[in-house]
Amino acid sequence: MPPTMQTVKMVITGPFSAGKTEFIRSISEIDVVSTDEGISPESAEYGTKEATTVAMDFGRITVDDDLVLYLFGTPGQRRFDFMWEILAEGMLGFVVMVDSAKPETFREAKSILETFRAYAPTPYVVAANKQDHPEAWSPDDLRIALRIEENVKLLPCVATDKESVKNVLLELLYSILEEMDT
Amino acid sequence: MALKGNLADFSTTQILNLINLARKTGILHLYEPIITDETVIDGAGNKRKKVVPGEERATLAFQEGKLILATAGNQDGHLANVLHKAGKLNAEQARVIRERGAKYSDKAMALMLINANYVTQADIVRSIQQFTLDIVYDVTTWKTNPFVFEENITPPAERITVPIDLKNVIMEITRRDQKLSPEIIEDLPNLDMALKFPESPGDKFKGVHLSVDEWRVVSFINPKNSIRQIAKACNMTETEIRQVVYGLLQAGLVQLVKPPGMQATQAGQRTPRRIQPATQTIESGVVKRLIAKIKDI
Image 1 (cartoon, rainbow over the protein chains, first blue to last red):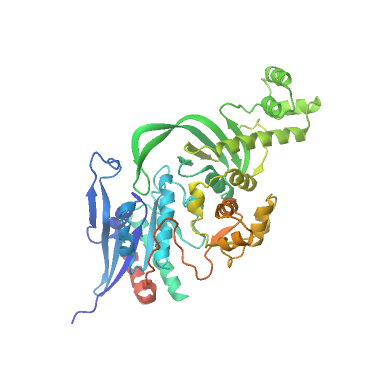
Image 2: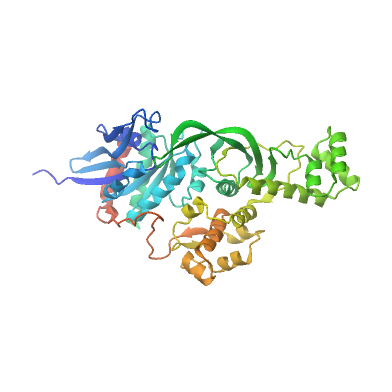
């Protein structure tokens, strides 16, 4: 009889174009299942990115025969925020992605962070993405700008770099472990 | 490194808060906003016109988190003009000093004026301080200007700089702002939150000038007292308490905390359903296996 498969879920959230899909794509062992919508040339989003997530992104990391980690990326646009609560159900923790080079998205990032905090008292980390961008705000500046408490991890991140993504996920897992131990 | 943005997304008060808390040195440049036909998207996916920097309208200089100098497009900050504006020199005196003293630096000019008994050192310090503050308070009324903060740049050595504590500036800005700006609502979405003092509050409050109302609010600060309860005790309206607390928050004098048993919700949003955290159903061994796997990838 095959062993019972245990699945663990983490949510990757953040504002529009923060790099959530890229984050999952960098670490997932399967091609990310994206429910993307192409952006038409008439749309304001045309030129900023080729497609935008409308329902969720889905990635997977298989640990062994009986344990799998699922990564769910939320849609960034507010009009799809009804999906957030559904995706948050049963999450072990969450990552809030912030585009460090776009201060126009900081307000939304903070709002999303507070919304997810309100869903469940699960551990979370903030990933200061696009740290390789010349106009990126430093993690220290972002902590003040977003009013992130000192006890919350705010990590530099480049979502296209697997090692950077691994570091963010590991730090989240360490926080989860720490909470379990207390 | 430069911090770039627009006051529409990150207000002057928020920039000053960042500079104050991070004890930054540098120069903040503020520009005329030029609205283009190009459309950009904010973090929520909403469209808006792209704003690009035009002509420079003001600069604010900072040293280790303190405001030290300001210039505005139409005010060159020449010492003679500053003293004239402060009423220490008349128009004719200022004109003559500007003409004859063109080759001297502000510091050299100040020494000559003091030695000639035109002004005292205290007059100069107070006049520059007031000139700087007038520009800052004017800048805080700007709402859509692009900005660039260049770190580790200082004003020319010949300029006279007077350090001004940003905590008092921030408090004064919030006192002057009579209407609730969006960032006040965002930073204080929920009046059921409580307040606490940061570490070493004695140092933070040193040199800070608070109004009677602000001191009354401070006297009720305790992680068990919600902001709503403090407002009631101080007989303040929601708008009044928001403005006082926002000023205290931005000046780094207090911090928001959840009072015992409170669930955080966002203003203007539906109350989220509470979800059972998976941390209560998953064993630590599972997390350790996940850690080992991710390390291995």
